[in-house]
Every structure is written in C-alpha cells, then in structure tokens.
Length: 333
Image (cartoon, rainbow, N blue to C red; front, side):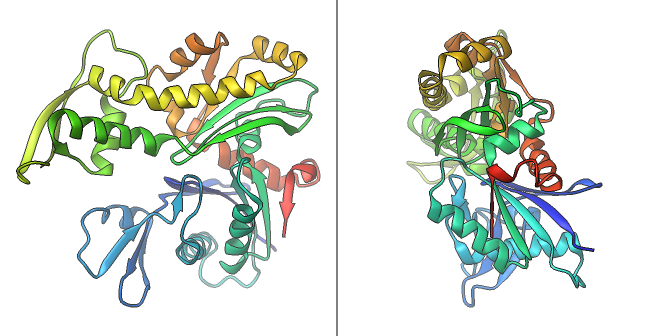
C-alpha cells in the first residue's frame, strides 16, 4: 500500500519516477512566491515562464543553487507540491521517497535534503549519491570488481566518480555545469557587443548553436536583448564559433576535474577505464561535440549514456526497488 517515489532534485529540472510507471513528472526547479506573505503561487513550468517577467509583488526563484538547497522553505513547498501531484491529494499512506544528492555534498547539505523530504510528507527518506545513481541508470555493471568512470553534469554541479564493487572509490565535485555555461555566454556577449541577455536566452543559444569544438560549418543565430550602454532594445547575430570561444574556459574546468579523478585512481582501476571509457550523463552531456573534446583531452574513449537526462532518476528508482542490494550506499532517515 505504501507508494515509492524516486526524485532527481536537480538545479535546473526535477524529475519524478514511480515503480512500474517510469517517469511521471519532469518540470523545471522553479518556484514563484508572493513577496508579501511568502505564499507559493506557481511551481515548475508555470513558474519558469515567469522568470525575469514578474511584477514587484511576485518573486520567481530557483530554490537550488549549484546542486544544493539554497532556500529550505521554498524547496520543502516545491517537494510537497510534486509529491502531492504524483500521489494525488487524498493520500492516506505517506510515501517512501529516495532523492539523489551530489557525492561531494557536505553532511549539512545532505541532512537539509532529508529534512525537507520528510517535512514535505515522506514517511521515510533515502539519499543516494548522484554518480552512483547515474551509473545504475546508465546500465553500467557497477557490482563487478572493475572500475567504471562516470561524469554526471547537470545544471548546477558536475561530478566525476570511479565506481567499483557497488560503491564510489574516487570522486570530485565541481559547482560548475550547464548554468555556468549559460552565464559564460551572457558575459561574453555583454563584453563583446554590450548586449544584456537573460538566462533563458543564453540557454537557447547554447542549445541551438553551442558546441564544445568549432563546427565545420558556422551557424548563426539572431539574439535579442538590451543595450547595456543606451538601455534600449538591441538585436545582434551570434556565430557558433563565438559561443565555442565563450564556453571553452568553463569546459576546461570540468575537464580538469576529471583529470584529477584519474590521477587519484588506482592503476588497476585505471586499466579498466582505458578498456571501457568514460560514460557521460546529465543534461550538459548533450552539448554538441563535448564527447569528442573529452576524448581528445583525456586519451580515453568517451560516450554518452542512453537517455542521459534521465539516467539519475532511473538509477534512483532501481535503487529504491532494490534497497537490500544498495543498502551500503544509501543514507536513511
């Protein structure tokens, strides 16, 4: 009778998975609150459409920053909304909820997620490390005595981990991912063209013409924003080569993190990684030619997991259904 729910609480998107049904909800991690009484007015897609467009009495905000909770009360309200939406309002039995958190998160950050989950209406809350969940979701055979290198890149944080015998052996976290790439594009355009653009426009540029390596054929996109000198609306044409130049320093930081993990990896595990390569998961792995750039820089074959956006939530769901198998890697409250 007790419902089980797996949640990938991401900086950019929150995805909910139910046993037997699969992914039942995928919405932006955005909440709109009333400034006067701090009341939640909208969550998810509806709230995201308000970003940068709200009047003075409404505040549209992202309660998670760089993979961890930045606003506890708003996160709790958002989790309650998602759990109620999945369970239905008339839920008699509180559900068991498993949420993934960055492996590099502090104990305080992990406790905040557990407490927020229980306050949102969970009977029992479980935590699993994101790289481990990503590996399970990507169908990597993690239980074997063999090294597997996972690079999980979401909206707020990136994590690289070597996994063997069902646990994380070496891992590094970086509070840099998709959102930082968007920010790099916005800063570059402001410096070069004196144009100010919003988060959503920067993300659109990244998705449409962004590439980790220069493209064979230059792609052009029309970008609209505000002139930072005159304060008037402005429109420019941006090339894919400029976007590649803008995001390269951010990508280099992520590559350095993976190199640090490889430096700390035992020789036997490193030998396994040479044979198997690196598995990329998370939304940022969808950036064009990022796998090719990583292969060039690391001398290890890199490939994207199937359905990279949902690897983490699928892995969290599998772990929730098989608690006995993954008990060593799960925190319970």
